[in-house]
Length: 73
Ligand SMILES: [Zn+2]
Image 1 (cartoon, rainbow, N blue to C red):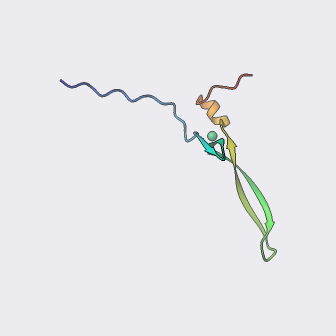
Image 2: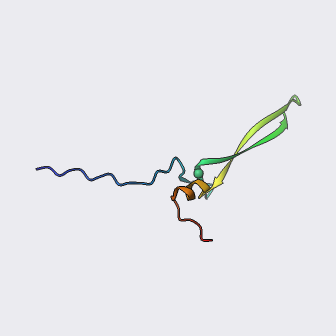
Image 3: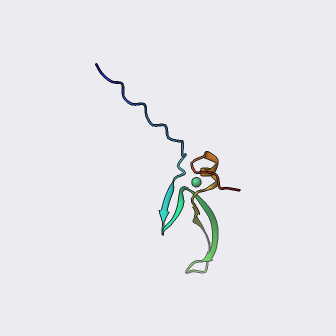
């Protein structure tokens, strides 16, 4: 006689939104704010570089997905 395997524990779908500790601050591994910086390179040619800024955890998506309790209003 065999016992059926335990059903998998249902976890909420995170869609990649999970907390990640960065410099002691929890940020979302999925969310970044991109901002464009303009600067001149060594030949004084204008360069546009995209900087990815971390989004603090919990991000808006995590709240919407119900991964974290909604902040009290
Ligand atoms: Zn996120």
